Image 1 (cartoon, helix red, strand yellow):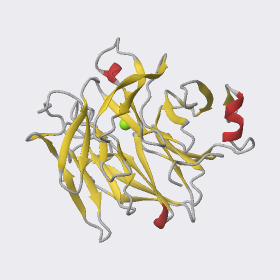
Image 2: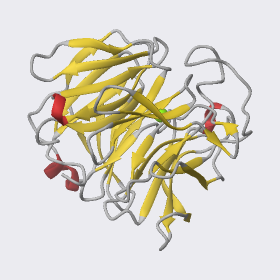
Image 3: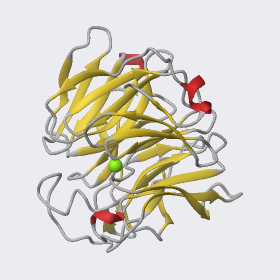
Amino acid sequence: MTYEVLDPRFRRLIISHAKLEKLYTGTRWAEGPVYVPAAKSLLWSDIPRDSLMRFDETDGSVSVFEHPCGHHNGHTLDDLGRVIACEHSGRRISRLEHDGRWITLADRFEGKRFNSPNDAVVKRDGTIWFTDPTYGIDSHYEGHAAQSEIGASYVYRLDPATGEVAAVVTDMVRPNGLAFSPDESLLHVADTGVSHVPTHPRQIVTYAVQPDGRTVRPHGVFATLESGVYDGFRVDREGNVWTSAGDGVTIYAPDGSPIGRIPIGESVSNLTFGGPKRNRLYITAQTSLYAIYVNAHPYGW
Ligand code: MG
């Protein structure tokens, strides 16, 4: 079964006869998908292999885009179409310039090195909001083992115009995936703290963006999972949350009720909307890259 419909609201977000496609297999831990429209390609990470992979939509071929790459994890695009990367071993937020150079946008908070940036989103004002858990320094598998200099895992706001870095969320154990609601009044953040604190709830937590557009306040729990974790997720233009959830993708309505599920069969790490009409959901799960056409689009499209 391709879809599980949990609520009638899900039916108009899907193409009922569209099937899940497995586009590539062979990664150790696939993560961080970003669709690059001008290149008709999807880039994604194989973190343990320290490789940035590329799926070419025009012929279905897969190649290594960059290796080594600083153990990239999450990616996103800025408003000029440049790729923003979260680097585990680079321990930085970097940007791929139009001339092909990777430049450092930030690698420290108050003089201390980041842990290992995990996932990022660009707000419409151009600031980059990203999470910084320890998965890239916990062992030598997804980066280089090291002690945390900061001693905590925060969500940061980075202004690439000035280099200013501010901690915006400091009450999570291991903040991971994140996304804004379509009007950017809410920031959703997944906490995978169960990896380090076994009793920690598996949740996506919502924060209310304050009128200054720069700070947030706790707003409430958006969704809770019984097993597995929420890692990366995206919000469509109606505010539905399409999220990794254990071994599948779960779709939540803006009110937090689960309305549908796409079983994948292995741990899903992240996803993104791609294709010329942004209606192709690309899904990274541990060993493989999947895709399925849906009747939803990301905000901004
Ligand atoms: Mg992640």
